[in-house]
Image 1 (spheres, rainbow, N blue to C red):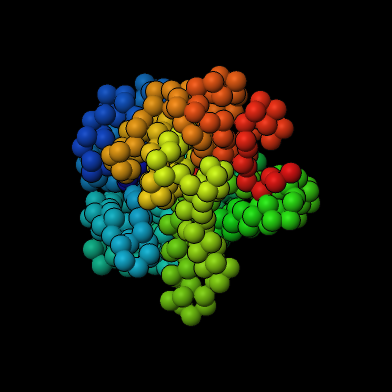
Image 2: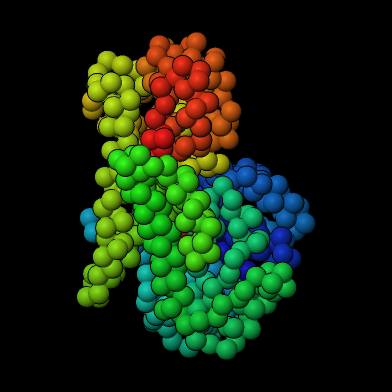
Length: 436
Ligand code: UGA
C-alpha cells in the first residue's frame, strides 16, 4: 500500500514508521520545514524509545521518506492519513479542528484515483462527516471515502502499542475503503489483533470514551487513596484487591498526583463539551476533570504537611518533571502545578528530570534551579519529592541521600518506595494512600 501521512508529530511519525516497518511505502508530510529537515538528516524531533532505529532502518530500506509538500505524496497514495494536532481551543475547551480541516482541503485538491482519507487525529464525533463535506466542496467529483481510525498508543511505549495493539478500530461507511483498511492492517490482523469495523461516528466516540474511562479509573483510585489516608488503609493493596477481579482489571489503578499529558486532559474536556452541547452531559467525566484539576495543587499541601506545616524559605527537591516516564513531554504535567504552588508558598525549588528539563525551562518560573542528577538535586534540600516514576529514581541510595539532604524527608507521589525501608533509614516518609 502507498501511504501518505499528513502531520509528522507524535502520532504521525510513530504510525508512519510502523506502517513502513510492516512493508508499506510511506511518505510523512509536515509543514514544519525544520522538522522535515531534521528527519531527513536522521534526527528525531521527539523522544520515544526505539523510534530512531525504526525510522533509520525503514529510510534505509527505501520504504519511508519525508516531505514538506503535500500534493505529490497525496496524488501518489492509496491511503492518506490525517495525523495533525487537535489541541484544546482556547477559551471553550473544544478540540480545535482547524488543522484537520485545512489538511482535508489541501488533500482534496491533490487526490488522484480512488483515495481513502483516514482521520487518525483524535477528533470529535461528526468530524468525518465534515471532512467529507469539505472534500466534496473542493472536488465535487472526487472518488474517495473518509474513514475514522483512532490511535491508542501511549507515549513512551508507542511502538510496542502500535505493533501489538489490544484492538484496531476502523469506522467507515464504504465497502471499498473496508478492503483498503484490511490491507493496511493485514500484518497486525495476521497477528490476531482484533480489527473492529464499525460506523464512523461510533469509531470517533470510541476514542474519547476509552480515554475518558481510563482518566476516570485513575481518578477513582486517587480518591480512594485519599480515603485510605483518612481511614488508615493502603491503596496499593486496595488496587490489587479490586484489580484481580477481571471485571475491573488491574491496569490504570496506580494512585498518583493526577493524570497529565497531551491526551487525557484535552480529551476529557472535549468530551464534556461535546456532551453538553448535545444536551446529554456526561457528569462522571465532568467530575473527573474537576477532581483531577484540584488534585495537582493539593499535592503541594502534602509536601507542606510533610515539612511540618510550612515551606517558606525551605528548599524542596523535585525528582521528575515530565507527566510520566520515558517521554520529554511536559504538557499538563502535575509537576507544573505542584512547583507553582510550592513557590507561591515561599519555597525554593530545585528540580531534576532525565529528559524534560529543556521543555520545563520554558514553562516554569526562572527561579527554579536545575540539577545534574538526583543526588545533586537533593543536596541541601529540606524535602525530596518524587513526582514522576522514572526507573532511575526507583533504586536511589537512600543513605547517600540522607547524608546530602538538610532534612531526611521523602514525599513519594508515585509510591515507588516501601514506607518501612525508608523509615528504617531515618527518613520521614509520605506516600499516596499509604498511611500504613
Ligand atoms: C493515553 C492512553 O493511555 C493511550 O491509550 C492513548 O492513545 C493516548 O492517551 C492518546 O490519546 O493519544 P498517554 O497520555 O501517552 O496515553 O499516557 P498514559 O500512560 O495513559 O498516562 C496518562 C497519565 O495518567 C499520566 O500522567 C500517568 O502518570 C497517569 N496514570 C496512568 C496514573 O496516574 N495512574 C495510572 O495507573 C496510569
